[in-house]
Each structure stands twice: as C-alpha cells, then as structure tokens.
Length: 373
Image 1 (cartoon, helix red, strand yellow):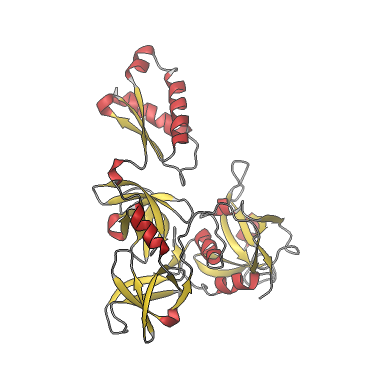
Image 2 (cartoon, one colour; image 1 turned 180 degrees about the vertical axis):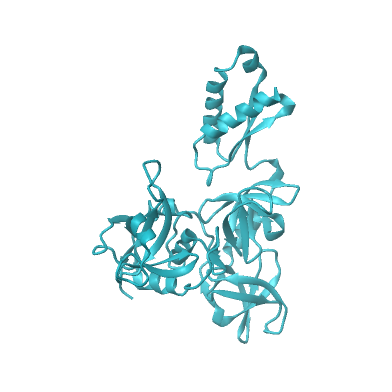
C-alpha cells in the first residue's frame, strides 16, 4: 500500500495551488496509520486539502478508499513549546527552502529582524514565517534566538538604533582594536544603551552586549518590522529613492540576497524602498501588484518608478514577471541587480543598452508621488 500512498501524496501535491512562499502545505505519508498527513500553517489550507483528499478518495476502489486515512498537522506544533517568536542573531541568516545546508536560499533575515516560529527539528533547524514580508522557510537554529511571547514583547518595547552604513562590525568593547562580535548591515535595528565617547552600547538578540560607533547609528522609535501587504503610492522623495539605489552600485548579485553583501533583483528593490519607509513584497511578481500602473511609455515614467520584465515569449499563465529594477528617469536608464547592481538602458542609442531587457519590458508602476528633495 506504501506505493499507492506515494502516488496519492504526489497527486495531491501537484494539484494543490496555494502560494507556498507564504503557507506551509505539505502532503506527507504517515505509514503508521496507513494514511496521508497534511502539514500546514493555515487552517483554511487544511480545509481545502481535506476536501481535495475526499474528492480524490472517491476515485479509488472501495478497498483502497477504506484503508487510507487523512489527518491535518497544524503549525505551530508542540515542537516549539513556548518559543513562538524569534530573532536573527547573525548579520544575515539564510532562509532555506528545506532543512538542509545545501537547499535553495529563498531570502535572508537580518540581525534583529523577527519571525514566527512554526516548527523546530532536533537536527538543528527552525521553520519560520518572517514578520517583514511573510516568507516561510528554514533557518539554522545556531543563527537565531528563540523567544517566548513575553520576551518578544520586551524586545519590541526597547528603544532602538538603526545602522546607517552599508556593513559594519560591532565590537566587544568601545574600541576598534577589540574583538568583532557581529557584522551588521544598513537598516539593522538593535536596542541601544549608554554612550561612551564616540561609541554606543547595543544589545544583541542573544543578550550579548556590543558596541557601535555613533557615526554608524541613527536613533529610531521602538519598532518591529511587520508585513504590511501591498504598498500603495506614498509621498516619499524619488530623489531619496535614487540616492539610496545608487549607493549600492557594484554590489554582487546573490540569489535570495537582500543586503549589501549581495542582492537579487527584488531583494535590491525591496531594500531600497524599505530604507525609505515603504514596505514591498519579497518577489518581483508580487511587487508588480504594488502602486499604480504607469505603462511602457518612458515619456510617462519618472525616476523612482519600478520597472518590470517578463519571461521571454511569456504567454498567459500568471503575470510572467521575473525581473525588476528602478527607473532613473534619464534616457530610459534603470538601476537593477543583474550580475551586480548596475545601470542599464532600454534606449538602443545608449552604450548601456540591453536588447534582452528592451524585448521583455512589461511596464512601470509608481509608488513614489513626489520628486522633491
């Protein structure tokens, strides 16, 4: 019967269409009870899966149908105990598609950023749902600090400082000669303590104390980054967007990256807008839903608009968006992460012209409503 269970699980898996970037939805074989176990982070997904299973079971022989059970395993489960929340405890922690060190990196969670804990494996992996953009994946337990609800609330209430430099190394003492204890990238927010000369004390997620230079830091309000849904146009300076984007020129491309250590295309755009107070979804095909559609006419496209590109010869299914950049507003120039963060052009007369981009250009969308400084 195990072979039949494998076939059932595979058939159900192929036909279940929820976006698994944001919902756990796994059909597993439960050999102990000769059945299918559906692991999910959503009760709604569980209901859908059960209806699908019942419909599928009706196509089996009566003997097969009577012998196959179906159960729902809802996350978070008892493996998490009281640790319902967590924080990244390293500069950039990889969020992977599977609980193995060689699986695909889906995104990253930066030092001090928060998440829900969904599942903990004894092998040293934690399944998480990021608060920033709702992404779900696996992180190494060695790179995160897990918290109870009370501990998480206490962390959120502490006054914070934000890193303003691209990459810095926090020190064990207020001295450049002291031991480095963490790296931290631009946008990281940590609880801030007393000043000592040119340095300021910072609190790391695991309770360790670190020191950063005052010139690296900007004080901010108590803050926990939370998913904000699809962003709408806001009165933010397009000049500020462009200044931030240009500051990352030359940074290497990294699949799943969203820091100056390496960006993918949507991670670059998400970071630029986040640093200017606008939260965007993680992936290009989701960012396509944000803001106001402007179209493909560059006479109407302004600096700071998002510019999107589709798969070559795309037809029909989904929106086909696979790449995103930011319009610079001059000679059809854009800045984007492709190989590295660089400037390209859609104008055939430009030395920076890229025919591939010009042929797959899908249009622009606007999130910034002012170009004032």
